[in-house]
Length: 217
Length: 217
DNA sequence: CCTTGACTAAACTGTTTAGTTTGATACGTA
DNA sequence: TACGTATCAAACTAAACAGTTTAGTCAAGG
Image 1 (cartoon, each protein chain N blue to C red):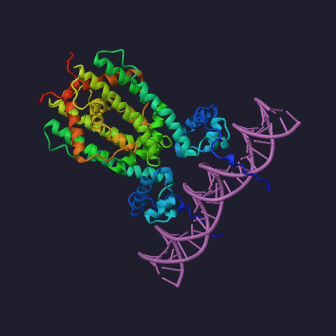
Image 2: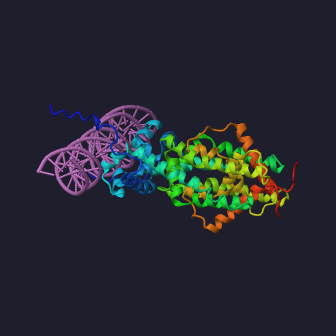
């Protein structure tokens, strides 16, 4: 009768959302998941990349899926928010749009962003929750924020917008040209800043041809 | 000395590109791959779905990757070609664009098309050859064909196009709104034909505001 | 000095899978 | 009847992998 009734054994003893180990593990997971995809990555590799024992991973995370979800949640929203940090400066609507477009595209074509999108799309069937969370925090939120901004500009008489949400998506889509799709399929190089600027400039011209009020030269 | 020097043993004895079995196997592969993804699909399942023994698969295909590639090659180009079967009828440029846009979007939002894109994107890192083949035969070829068409319309004076390829991608991207991205992330329903028509109509209006020559009221 | 809690490396479990081999069946034909 | 060809079902091999367990290390602190 050794009485090993360690009733206090339950629960994660170590799962403080902000711990060095936890961050190490997520960093390792990012490296391996981004490189090999969800199915291709093994937990042994993640442990090795994180400089942590496999057992420790299972102390901090319930399993592979939970670790992946933590990674996505950790990385996602950052970008969508930073997109609009350019707002204040410009008061010309075309300059404003150009800034936003460049900011958007510069972010979108980052290798890590592409890998993240790839992985989330790949696992969207298996883990719809992750796909939805990513979509809501990324494209959806970004579209809504641009829609608000367009609406404000329309109220100032600088744009003529009928459907602000539709217009927002149109603008982002115009900016993408074929680069993003190409990168998702593993074709082509990351465009240079100059190329991005040119594509965005085109997008702004087309966009303003329909939605603009002042017809500039 | 039984002299079993069957020197003719080499090479695929059965690999005629068009055989009933070969087609059966690809059909089975489509069913299973689309449902489970490349990694999730097992060759036993494919064999069962194809009504074929696993050994037979390996007579016709060198392995899982080769089978997947054959499936992609088999299914891909079909769509990109059918896109432009609407050409002849319309001679109004906006009608023409609307037809092409609707045809494009109707194809893009098919569940099987979404699954195919998802799978190719997911495997693009592992098998770049497949990603490239799909991209070349799909988006790239489609863009080029629309660019040609736009150029022809421009030569007839119905459009004012500076960069036909860029304009083509802009048009396709305008058509997509948020539907395709949403479906790829597993969010939202397949849009109804009416919704597609509306989105495409918007896209045509925006496109023609910049590229059109006749300003229709 | 001993306990406790976090951690590690390594072995282990059970399962899944790609790909191979084997032995049998069925068919057309010489 | 005998032979070659195509196929099949099923067993098998070898490897990988998620997740668990074990035995032990290390440091803080009482």
